[in-house]
Image 1 (cartoon, helix red, strand yellow):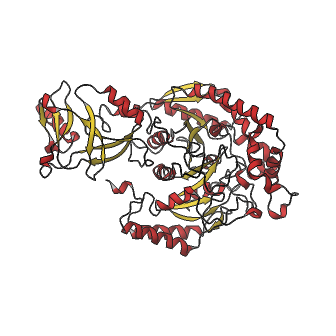
Image 2: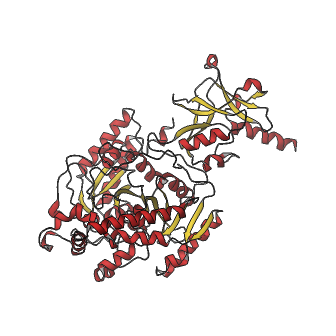
Image 3: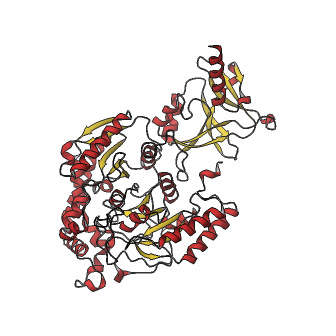
Length: 588
């Protein structure tokens, strides 16, 4: 097993140095980003604990990674305020997402500012102060996960947790030039997270490194036995993006009224996708944008009253820190009728049926993350109108049960686009973004949630960059790592019309035959079945043991019925092919 894949900082010195640098930077934090921070000595003790665990042999995917946590997510021993200090409480346990990050070696630095009760996309609705954009103190940071977005953009934390119901994990990413991972509803349990709209709340991730953000998603994903809405990962969902994906782009009328420069930037982004060879389909997505209005403009907002209405039951009291906009939204939601709520739920089902038809046979939808970047003064003058406009392209995503990722534009990092796909396509979106936005020429190693997909070991043309690799990508497979078989395997090239490599196990030759190098991929269970059905004779799938003892699936065949050349001396199919090409070049 490649332990580097599992550990970010793998020495005591590197972790200690990293933590000390983080603590030094905290003193230069932008205004109002934190509600509370962890005592430096406690942070150092967290780091020391991680070091001891590494020295004890644990594999920690997030060893030494620093985390900021939005203040509606519980961290044991730190008050949870939700930016509503009169409701502050002291949790005795970490939220499931925080606990899983700590178990993976992450170190919590503090709790971040937010729009009160996660109601807003602006970052101005907090008694702890307005949070401004990392680039311009006159512009808003975006919300409601305002502090989380800015601390990552400022380099104060490696990753930050937010929550996202209407766009709170994407708008702050857009306004601060970072990535905002919005997982499928239910993929990360919300145990220990103060609800806003329980049916649509998710824990989100801010990061500047998608590989790191994906690791965080992987370790937090999966039911915890406490959150009734948590969901198992779909066995049919792709783990990687198709080699030449089909991309839906909105028609011009869908993006009318947005910032003119951003509209041009968005069109440039579409052109860039086309230049990569992707199939781009201009499609009217009005049904999605209309569904977005149901979250605040319809009766679904009644969920906010059910969750937090009691906090505003008394007369308005600005002295305790009540935000008037949030108070108005929540209390007005309490007057909505059960009849309208049921009707809007049906409207949402109808919208999803139509939206899913649009998404059929496409790999993703690309939209601007939001419409414009308002100033703090704009929000103060028109608090409800500005906020509503910002959610135009974000509000529908959780309502329609899609996954999403906000990314800085390739042409203008101050502009952001969002990649949207069906539920549980989270890792496929991340795969594409790593290749397109972080310029990875070939798929990079990945950590996936425990139990997701089937491990497939390949030694021939299905490896990265070779002729059949696209077949794996079309089936939603994702590269995991370069690794080797256990001893005792012989690599042979079958004398078929097109030479094919295969593995033959010799139990009595384990001291003679060393491991054969190949690649481990993770493929959806449905994809593995399709692959098996498509294999030509004489290829088959069967068990293969890796050098670290894992039993996985690999390619095999009864080589006794074919002439075969033993090529084990080369150690891998790639090196054998290099030899063939070198020989042919010399002969020429």
